[in-house]
Length: 264
Ligand SMILES: NC(=O)C1=CN([C@@H]2O[C@H](COP(=O)(O)OP(=O)(O)OC[C@H]3O[C@@H](n4cnc5c(N)ncnc54)[C@H](O)[C@@H]3O)[C@@H](O)[C@H]2O)C=CC1
Ligand SMILES: O=C(O)[C@@H]1CCC=N1
Image 1 (spheres, rainbow, N blue to C red):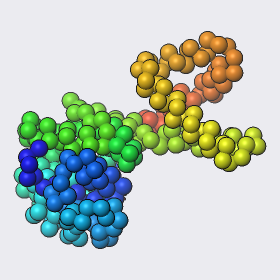
Image 2 (image 1 turned 60 degrees about the vertical axis):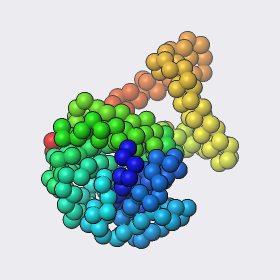
Image 3 (image 1 turned 45 degrees about the vertical axis):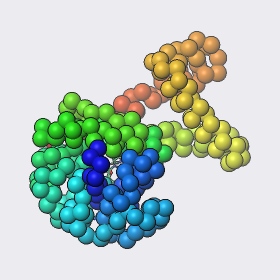
């Protein structure tokens, strides 16, 4: 990254905005004097350890100060962004807003769409991104370095893949949360104390995910291996499959994908 490039995050106090800003600072990808955030609610607590970070209320001021602009407002707030970035590099984290929509809203052709997820907060996000043809190879290296501060970043060959991944990985941390919620309700109804139920659910989901990651094999192999015991797990898995868990997941992902694509 150019040593003196200034990054501006519009919505830099929000969930994704501050996750990215703080990750860049903590990993020293960026020195605090090279980060500007715009926030309607003032400075807030997220950057208290870095007083050199500049905070402005007016996003037009941020655009004037920054070389690279990150958009991290909610999709409904895009149309109200009264900014003109010229040909500065713009990185949009917004779901549902196409490259074309972002480009025409901010007036730049150098636009990257990136899709973080909630795990950016702990730097374990999956962050696919797609760039417009006007984004240079140097820009792309920079984008990859910035986004990798929050997890695993990956350039995509097609914008449509980003819409799909908005539903799969962008929304993704909500899916284990739903599973955890359902398991927790069941454990409580079986009479376990709240403390033990929570501990059991969390350790099981985290441990199971880490094991899958470590094994690196097809998840179906682990399912088959456990079905092979023909015991407790097999009974549970077969019932879940027969009750339509697979279809429910596919239909949910289809619905999220349709929402991510909007009218396109
Ligand atoms: N939260 C998530 O898990 C994910 C969010 N996203 C996308 O990231 C974007 C941001 O989402 P969150 O951080 O979760 O939302 P958020 O609501 O936590 O943050 C948005 C921030 O933007 C600020 N804001 C709104 N209009 C502004 C303006 N004109 N100038 C300056 N600041 C302004 C708000 O005050 C707020 O602090 C969204 O577009 C969303 O689609 C993408 C993937 C995952
Ligand atoms: O729910 C949303 O629209 C955004 C995109 C993925 C996660 N949050």
